[in-house]
Image 1 (cartoon, rainbow, N blue to C red):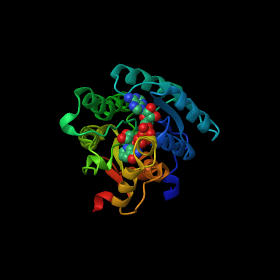
Image 2: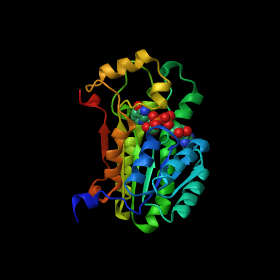
Image 3: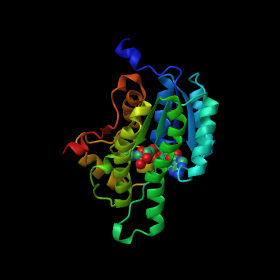
Image 4: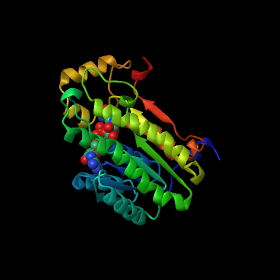
Length: 256
Ligand SMILES: NC(=O)c1ccc[n+]([C@@H]2O[C@H](COP(=O)([O-])OP(=O)(O)OC[C@H]3O[C@@H](n4cnc5c(N)ncnc54)[C@H](O)[C@@H]3O)[C@@H](O)[C@H]2O)c1
């Protein structure tokens, strides 16, 4: 088998959460281009259905279900439904996430719950639901989307709850990698730096974006496509000895 063959994902079944837009959308399309059929678990069903249509044009099967990663029972039920429609589940990308910019000293409890429930507990529920399908098959690759904000504090915006949740995702990933190594389930995460999506560009003032770009050694934000090589690698057999890793894709931000 050549190294090119090891990267191929033909016939694999992949589920991506929050793939209605942004990073999740581009990762779902990239996995389809690499050969996967795709299931999308998304809060915004209309967006997810548009992505399903894009993937079908690539000649791959695609399905969308409406769901909220903060609801444990819904996650379990809908992951099982997608796996049934896909005819299996080889790859899960836990991408759905939210961010709020606010000072820690005045963060209301409901915002803390919203961010931690979505970005940390949601990933835990999704990993649990994936494991229930993958453990009996003794095979799987789970990829959690953490953030460089799980490793460093951001500047100038304040987002302590988000960063703490993302740091939690990185350690959760390592713990699950070790817990599930005997089931042949690899668990890794990708930590993006500043990336052009609705979460960042549409919700942030142009001056803040300029500041982020100047603080990034490459002097720009990422296009979501630039994160997808890491996702295809982690999903594929090329990563057969890679588990418990955090691949940081941040234009050099955390290297400083
Ligand atoms: N954009 C960045 O600069 C950046 C950097 C580092 C990490 N990330 C992480 O990457 C992931 C994707 O970010 P993005 O920039 O594409 O965000 P985005 O806001 O553009 O897209 C997020 C998607 O997740 C969905 N979603 C949100 N909450 C959900 C829930 N409870 N259940 C199901 N779906 C839900 C949304 O409907 C949306 O389609 C997030 O986990 C984010 O924290 C983003």
